[in-house]
Structure formats: C-alpha cells, structure tokens
Image (cartoon, rainbow, N blue to C red; front, side, top):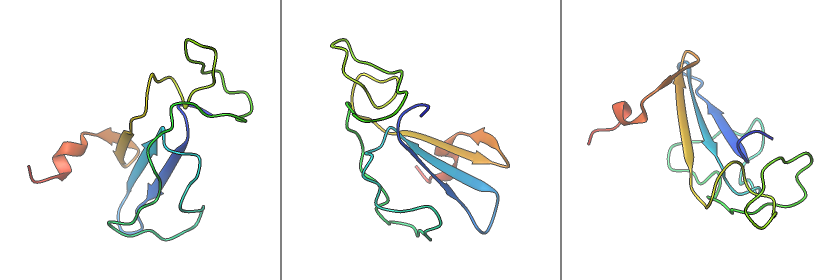
Length: 93
C-alpha cells in the first residue's frame, strides 16, 4: 500500500488515467468494471484503516491511517500519456 487506498480509472478513448487516493477500502467497483461519468466508484476516507498488511502509516495515537494523512480527504491525480496534469485545465470554471 502506498498513499492509502486507491482506485485508478483508465480511459478507453484516449491516454488519460485518473487516480482517486485515500478512499474507503469498501470499493464500489472491481478491477475490470466499466465506469461512466457520474458513477459513484468509492467514498472518501476513513482516516483510520485496520488489517492492511505492512501499512507503515500511523497517527499520533499509533492507529493505522489511510496513507500519510491527518484526516479524511481525496487526493486526485490525472495523467495524460503517463504525465501528471493540472485537473483544473479540464474544467470550465
């Protein structure tokens, strides 16, 4: 495990990949599932996760955490051609 629980979605029409990190270990999709825009694939968090083999991450109380984090959040990484890009370039804001 590196950086907590992660789901990576690969595009079938171009060379984009989107990774959602520090999510709940109760995934709503499985490897090979086809996902579409707006589909709920996972929930954010929790901060603490248990029963993860070789998890090096701990909070100040010694409890295992969902990666190097202090609380629930979503880490979003978008890559095009294997190179990280700024996700804000993909939205009309």
